[in-house]
Length: 176
Figure 1 (cartoon, rainbow, N blue to C red):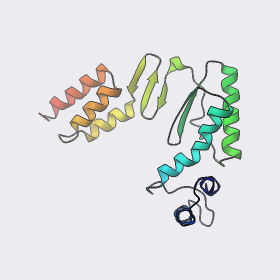
Figure 2: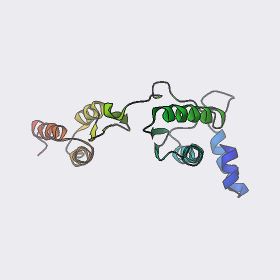
Figure 3: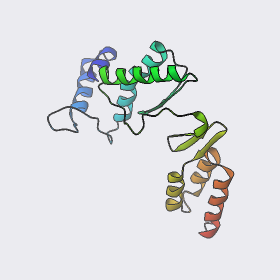
Figure 4: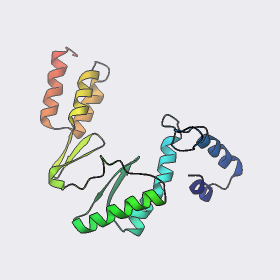
């Protein structure tokens, strides 16, 4: 991380401050591994660090179907052999260059027709829908002050069945 930051940040004081923030946290005592999740800088550090992966996938592997949000990413490719090659190259790059490992539970090659769970939404060839876990969370947290927010979430990412369910919860709990 410091190597990447040093290429971009020339101000010594600023660089030393970032260095102090990075070294202020470790997941394993005496080994500076991990990143403070609750720290305000963790999201920007993740984006700076994983920008190296973005550049590798876009410029070296020349992949056009690539999306990343935080540390979650997906690659789209029609050719299965090419996709397997890309997967192996990305795993190699993450391990050798960024010293990161992909979670085995998330390391999957799927057909688009089966759908893909990504960032709390199930993406299908014909659209998207909220996954069950998020619907249960909405049901548990729903109250008068947040109904509009959840209504917008389901309107944007849900389907008509989920919207009917939200309306039913609204009437059942007398939020009107």
